[in-house]
Length: 420
Image (cartoon, rainbow, N blue to C red; front, side, top):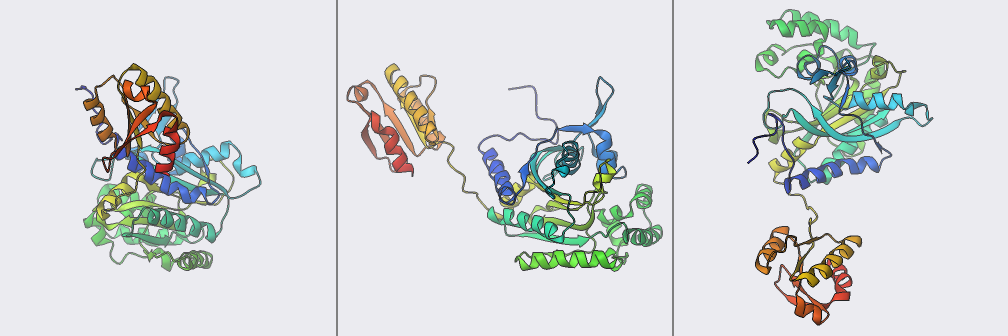
């Protein structure tokens, strides 16, 4: 046994469970690809300042959870804790916003890293699929992304999730609310760290999960009571568009996101079968982020959905995905001539899109058939010297046990016919 183990708070994806993760990623990405979103991939690490400016220096992500390090050349880098800042940086660097077709619609999939106390549903290394629509301020764009996420979850068979929706206002109305909230928070019995947070970004205190803090927040001023007319109208249109699409949601006036860059529309997908880590995804509008990281004004909106938590949500609902068989045909050669012939047939089957595998290592019939059973293959091809002398191989149906002899040159056509 190896003396090394995966680092604390991380996990390895191994078969057969990894097939479920791949299917979840594909299901989340499918509606995006069908809606004009192009794939983007960014480095696993970025300049620390990108996250400090974009995510917010007062956030727990930046102050406590980022994996930051200094290179031999003296650069300060960090493993990416989230995807939006990296995607926007890449879009700006490539001048995608100057191509004349706004919004720039991008989707991505990858691993992210935060130093947190590990627990079920919260890891130090986790996987997300995300989408960003950069360069347009339009309620229909906000609604589109929420609808696409809902579509992705429902395509997986999930039903017991809820969409929480709120507006965080903009640079016109949020400062007024911020001041009112700070006045309220100064009158509470909060610890020193929370008080300091309330002075830097008081909205983040509303997101505090501790019962002792939440009990004191009863009666706190709500942002919806401070929204300007423009934000009220924008939010109402988002709500109407989502509702018209048949997507259910809940208004949550206390919903905030843990990152500083959000404005106006904010939303979260929660699943009540996951305990304390109930959020399976979320996002919102971030109209000022481009300017925060040195770019031009580019109003944008996006979301990220957790692959890990989506898998846990599927387990909580007892949903089993219909995964394609990793192997449909397994070839068992008996003798050197059969190895040569069946290996060639396996290669031909793969070329026509049939998942096929081969008994490697020169095993005898009994051991090779055990491997065939373990592979989950529907059919097994078996051939020995006598079979080949007659120009046939034995085709065994692993479900019914039926076995028939077919011509060597008929193998591919016969299996294509049987497997559809």
